[in-house]
Length: 138
Image 1 (cartoon, rainbow, N blue to C red):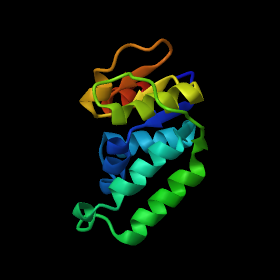
Image 2: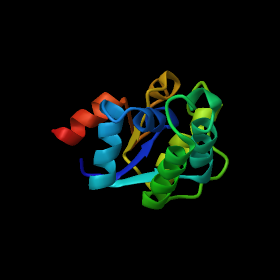
Image 3: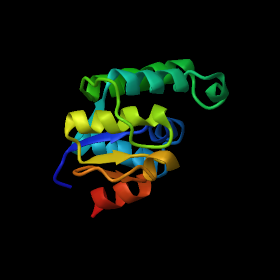
Image 4: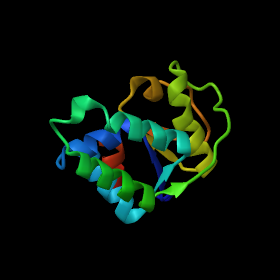
């Protein structure tokens, strides 16, 4: 992979935090080792809000959630975005594409079908965690 900057959707980051094994966790680890994770304030805020949902209480402690957020925030490259353009069916997902475009990241990783089905954008590929992991391991 020539572009070391990656935007990773909230669902993939939460999956990685909840399960140390599996494609999402392996992917996040490799991105942190070989490149840079990119956040904008809106994408990080979504991660924070969702990770603190009570439904995750039985799977991940409050202390571990705080550590995950701290570590990801500290390791990430941050970009500013404006009002997102219209790229996919779910307007709330457009911020991930806008973040990738602002960072000039070549890859956005998501398990969200709305993002995976988004219209083609020159210079940006939207991959599943499994596809992205395969590329990193190739």
